[in-house]
Length: 240
Image (tube, rainbow, N blue to C red; front, side):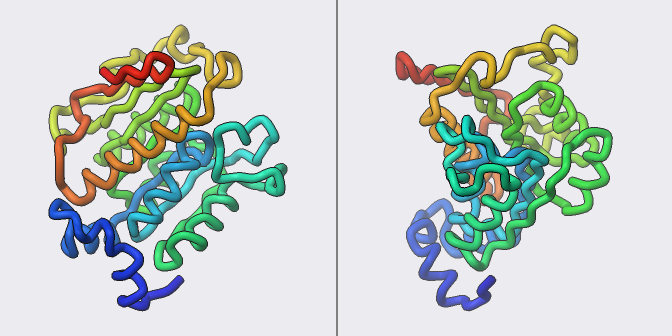
């Protein structure tokens, strides 16, 4: 890590020029903590772009290792990292892009331990880049108990859904995952990318949207997605 203020200022100069960010917003980013659940298709773009934005600390939670079939969309990883923990790629990306940012990897599966292990890092925001409703319900419940918002993305084939859940009502109406998707066996059985497929570039599109929404919440600018869901159909290139 580096703490050279001139290095940091020059590295982040382009978004400091934005009227909505400026030096004050850059300082808020540097003081923020974000927990990212999943270093897969969504995390592969969320993590590098949060690091590039200068988010002070990024905690990545993923218990998986890199597999060959991941590489059509999980550009955080490479053929050389097959068999290695995905969190290792996340840490390396942070060091490569933004050495002043602290990227911490947690190789574990989140469940009943969510409040303990995620709460221990005191995140301001949780980004849910998981790929199953089993994990999504864990994140929804845990984040609600911690009182922090969830920037949510879900992928399938050519399409995606993006929104922000905020049980505490800090950023808008108090909305949770379970207000839209009831916790039922049918919802939990929803097939994922392994069964239905996914175009890799769609994961990249959505990951950058999740990173952008996270940055907006931290800086406190723009219209957020609390109470709204963005639906992306990349095959017909329609966004509703």
